[in-house]
Image (tube, rainbow, N blue to C red; front, side):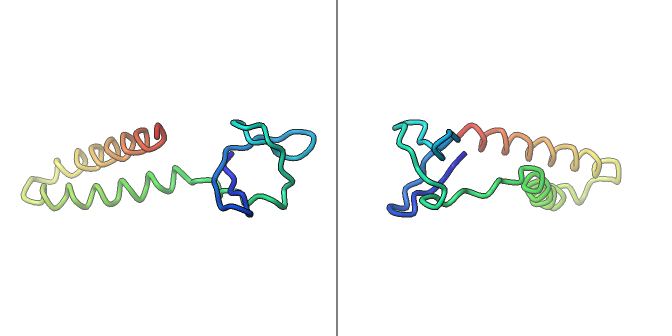
Length: 91
């Protein structure tokens, strides 16, 4: 999990150990009160927001099409949102 060192503001990746938390790169040990933890990211909520924004863009372009194209626009928006999340998670 990600945590920020209160003393320096540096973000590190930590895991739990019997003494508290350790930096997975340097193996330095930290007490819980030395760290601020990153909130868990809600990928489902982000997916919904991304799909909504993408859909709005697609609908603007597709507004001259017939009713049957609207469902395809929704499917495409979700595909783009899924790909966006995949790309972001790889970073």
